[in-house]
Length: 143
Image 1 (tube, rainbow, N blue to C red):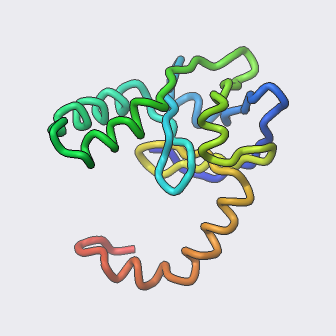
Image 2: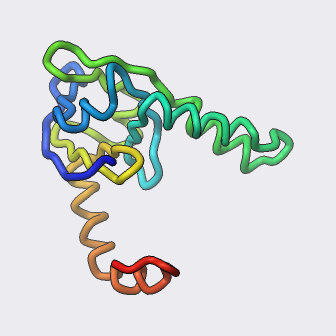
C-alpha cells in the first residue's frame, strides 16, 4: 500500500526523484497518466493492467466512456527509473499538473499521485475544512 507525503523538485529536464519506499513497491517500471484533480497518477504495472481492462470494457458508443478512455490512455507513459531513482515526467503530464519545480508525491493506497506544491497546498486547504462532512458520507468505514 502506498502511503506518505514527500517533497521533491523537478529538474530542468523534467526528471523527478521517486522516494525509495515507493520505488520498492512499484518495481522496475511504472505507468504515469493524467490523474483527477489535475495531478499525475502513478500505477504499478499490475494496477495499470486492471484499470486498462476496466476502461476497455466501457462501451465506445457512450461519449463519457470515450472521453475517460482518452483522458487516461492518451496521456499514459510507461517509464523506468534511472540509476538515481528518477523518472522523466513527460511534458504533457507536467503541463496537466502545472508542475514547474516543487512537487509533492503522495501515496493514496492503491496508487501514487504527483502534485505541484502550489496546487496541492490549495487543494489540501480546501479539503481540510470539509473532511468531517466527507467522512460522514462514508458508510461502513470507521475512521
